[in-house]
Amino acid sequence: MGDFGSGIYIASVWILPLVLAITLHEAAHGYVALRFGDDTALMAGRVTLNPLKHVDLWGTIIIPGLLIFARAPFLFGYAKPVPVDFGRLGNPRRDMIWVAGAGPAMNLFLAVISALLIHGVGVLPAPALGWVADNLINSLRINVLLAVFNLLPLPPLDGGRIAVGLLPDSLARPLSRVEPFGIFILIGALFLLPYLGGMLGVELNIFRWLVGVPSNFLLELIATLTGHG
Image 1 (cartoon, rainbow, N blue to C red):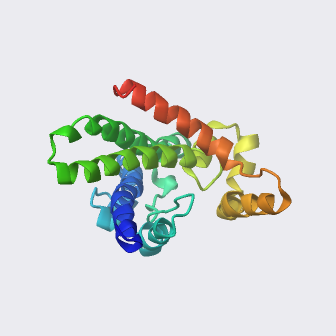
Image 2 (image 1 turned 60 degrees about the horizontal axis):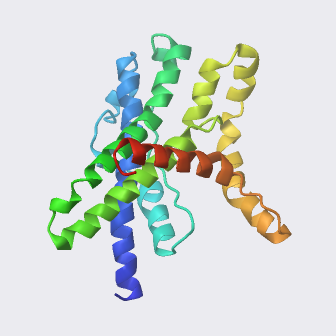
């Protein structure tokens, strides 16, 4: 298979599980927000499992696609954030924890389902078996990574909002004020620190420990619980 054909195959087994993982993550936020009294996402047409309602052209398609074709050592993507008015929740501080936690919980659910479905690929015809198996394996990996990444305690990530809801006011208020700068902190930690470390000959890839180590633990745990050894 030529490089182009190989690239098409790689894209076909990564993009579908990535799109489902990040769009269903966002849908889960909308469903739980509605359950606790905020219909903002419903009014915006975002309380749906239809991935097309959540896809962001750049974050869900173009950026991940370019990274896949470039065979980058990491995969990054995002969907359109579901609008949530925390002030309309019945108990904003408590309910914010449930709304924020719904996204990572959805990803863990999808990871377990993917692991279970791998047991059934043997019944498929040979031409489809490998492709479906690769999609399911990648779905397992992507969903675990997304769950762990989003649980980092830094706003605007879900883990940051969970932390704001759980911490006492003396710590929650300063942490919540980080949110406007959180994306820049993430970009710096994800891209700039490893690049700087490479130039200096120092290991500065903090995500290897913050995301990689717990993700590997979760992957092994899910594999064991779903009968993969």
